[in-house]
Amino acid sequence: MSVFEQLRPFVSLCQACGLIPYTMQNSLSTKKFIKFTFSFRHFTTIWFSFIFILQLATIAVVSYFSMNRVVDFLSDGTFPLTITVVFGMNWLSVMAQLLASRWISMQYRQLRTAIEQVQEVERLFGDKLIMQHKSSVMTRFILGFILVLLAVTGLLFVSIPVYKSLLPSNMGILVTTAIFSFGMLGLIMTECIFLLAHLSYYIISHYIHLLLLHAESPDELPVISQKEEGCNMRKWENSTLILNHLCRASSELNSIFSFPTLFMLTSKFISVVSTAYVCVYSFSHPNHVLPDFSMSIPFVFFTDWMRIFVALYAADMPVNQVRLLRERIIAVSHSGLSQTLTDKIDAMSMLMQTDESRVRLSAVGLFNVGMHLIPALTGAAVTYMVILLQS
Image (tube, rainbow, N blue to C red; front, side, top):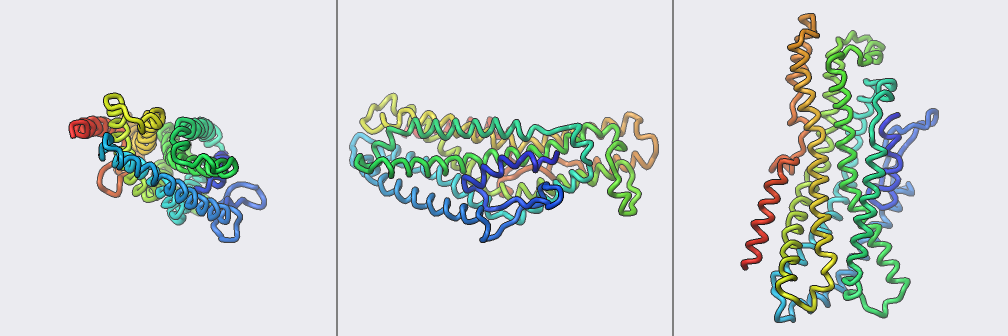
């Protein structure tokens, strides 16, 4: 089964929460996925626009009522200005996720190209081989969806004291329910960004893993489609062609997630430092304002670290598989399994094209994204928190 058939529940979730305005087009004969389409006449696009307008209205309402709390912060002589700035940075972190979701929704051309490349990979592999090595896309979606619900409901629960202090008591049950519902829908949408990145890079790494499994016997890969076109492809050429398609798909994904990754990593890092500072400050400086945030601040600190971890882990998945594939090709080329000179030349040709940089995600070219950033981020977070405490 194609991974796109397994992704239907996730696509429906993204459409329902207003993350993507695209509609899945199916084949009339096989009912299988063909491509994503975009049209202002589609219900998905209309719903996307409606959700976007509601989100803007909700942000405006919450921002309006938040001004009273900002005045309280500034008028409190025992409340340092640093804490007010910190809460402003946390609000910026939330806005960063919202802006990143809108950026991703506009990258239709890159998304379409990435999907076409993966579809070509599935055609080259063949249905039989794909069925033998099923992906865990559905399992990862279910687990990710559970984590999204836990993060959203947990944040709403721990933020109840904050909302009570922000919203007027005479607002009414209907208006309050509407604000909470729209807020929850918006939170689900922003959390789905990380799930989208994880599933996208997992699909790339899964098919690279299939190449890794068959590196010792590349002649088992089907080449019927090429023969039908009159090409007599050698066994290593098919593997190289599949790798090139996967690298092209990964490159398109990198162009989609490059700017949002930089924006969200920066904002989440600032959020982690600021929430850690507020937690330490609240223990040493009791204040009548901080008790409202006693539960929400530690929760945001923990969930933001988890978001950073998910983003870095997702970016590393294709890189790790390409590294393993490169090691396997080197082992095969020196093991004598490639008997003919032509096979050895083809193996060396594929080896030269098997480079981690072709699938590595970079933050707008400033730095490479991966798990190797965790020690540096941890050290920087501790350093900046100490600086804030000493100020």
